[in-house]
Amino acid sequence: MKKIKTIGVLTSGGDAPGMNAAIRAVVRAGIDAGYKVMGIKRGYAGLINGEILEMNLRSVSDIIHRGGTILKTARSAELKTEAGIKKAVDMAGIFGIDAVVVVGGDGSYRGALDLSKQGLPVIGIPGTIDNDIGCTEYTIGYDTAMNTALDAMDKIKDTAYSHERCTVLEVMGRNAGYIALNVAIAGGAEVVLIPEKTYDLDKDIIKPIIEGRNRGKTDYSVVVAEGVGKVIEIAAKIEEKTGIETRYTILGHLQRGGCPTVYDRVMASRMGGKAVEVLKQGRINRVICLKNNSLIDLDISEALAEKKSIDMGQIDLFRILAL
Ligand code: F6P
Image (cartoon, rainbow, N blue to C red):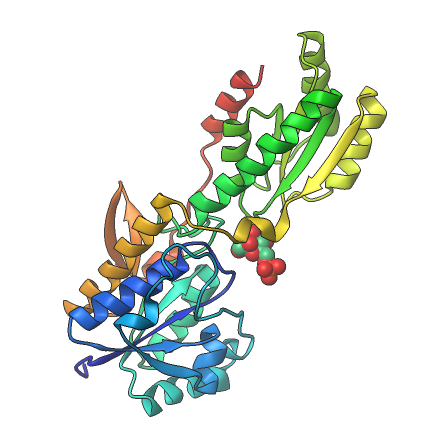
């Protein structure tokens, strides 16, 4: 294997708070380890187009507290083609990049795997608010997104309390209910709907609301993961079937921005540092994962094959605590 002297760093897929902290860690730990570090803009699209600039210690000043990603991000359709992969590998060669650190979700990992198969070494760092990468217990941005959603829920609950209403809140998570379930538990919701579990309108939504009213509740919240959808319809059905005035809110991209929490800043810093350490030890085509609360690295193909599933016991607990 060619000796790695220059590393590139890029962010890919949906942005997540803490990505800047990860970039900062890769740049500073990389320079400390003796590497030249190049910032690649706009994810894989920027790699293909050669939007590449050398980073120095000051390139990453004053960013650890900022949401978004200073390198910008994109979802590249071109990298899904053979020609796109070749262009990306060639462009890395033109800029003398010997390995690329990719911060992103599992789609970005698949792109990284394709690059590695064409001879460009890669390291993946998990970055997505959804926490839906199978091989790792944590993905950068998840904690901040949950706290943002929870803050919104707390505020919506104040007004629902005053008006004695029901509120239906849609949080992000196209395929995963991690944000929804945790926000529902932490926010004291009456009902939670996640993509991993089918629901019955009468049994799982209407009944617990009416039973809650019979036990003396005067306001109600229903948290719905984006992947379940239909919040407008669900809100209308609740109002129609219970007679309780109901409003809905779709939080959307609000959850992707904002100041990263302590946990995200520290986890992103640790994962960035670990990525450089792994390269320095001569290991390539690895992804950084949190397992049993420790950072480890796994082969990227094996990591992509790993699955994780939501703890259904948490839903049972949620139901008991929602009484
Ligand atoms: O994967 C992160 C995520 O925020 C999902 O929760 C959501 O479904 C998706 O990205 C939205 O993507 P976009 O920013 O392209 O609308």
